[in-house]
Length: 332
Image (cartoon, rainbow, N blue to C red; front, side):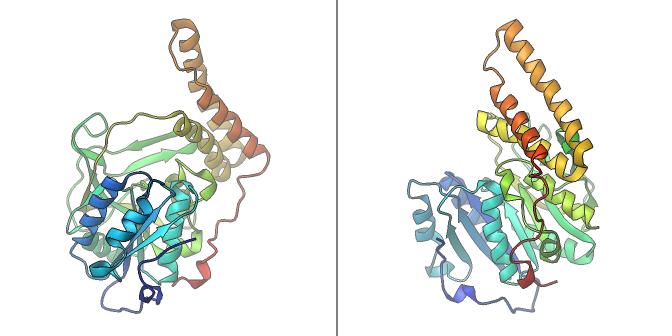
């Protein structure tokens, strides 16, 4: 079941003054961060902008709190709240907002982590850059962050590369030359993925079965395979409130499993085999360190994820439909 802020908001967008942007914020047990993120989105200097908050079955009354705070009154027509009845994972929850953006006829859909704070000029800079270079299917602002291990120069992402077969991603952490255009990049992070809806309607939504990790890389693969470019807009900035990486066993499981799935889907048997070798080497080193040096915990999550990914590839689970159910209703 879904709840929305107003019936009037269900009408198809027909504004022609400027491209319509739908920003999508996924909330999962992060109410305080989501409130700050949405407040920054409400303050951006861009009129044709709507916000969709997707509560991913957080529990604890968070969906009701978001609905009560943003789902009406002065925000009617500007913010909608969708409450999922179950945890769909990051990509699956984002898809609820992406489907709405396609149904609304939006030009761009912007998927955001909830622990981001958006600069006032960010949306306009992204729209201007994407409008000037129609061959780009997705882009990102430069993502700033507090200085720390993940952002030694105060930059968390200014472009990057991804290789599922090697189970690796890399962010550019140095400043890039300022300008109003787009700088080509190897992949766009799901932290702030600004997607052209015409491209999305052709290649499909996030692969929901991934649940957690690699969904952004997998969508980028589909975009580039379909001939779209990916870029970073140096004139656009937001801040990612990175709290440090403390991977859970669940996150580790999905990282290993999904790297194999994505490599298998886009690199076929050879890609999956390379991913399995790369991840097996990592897991073996962890097992050796645990056994020889007495380190803990044992890498059981890594091992389970690796076997689950290999089993899924062998069963043919990588060849799922890539088109969204709502693609026919989107503008091309």
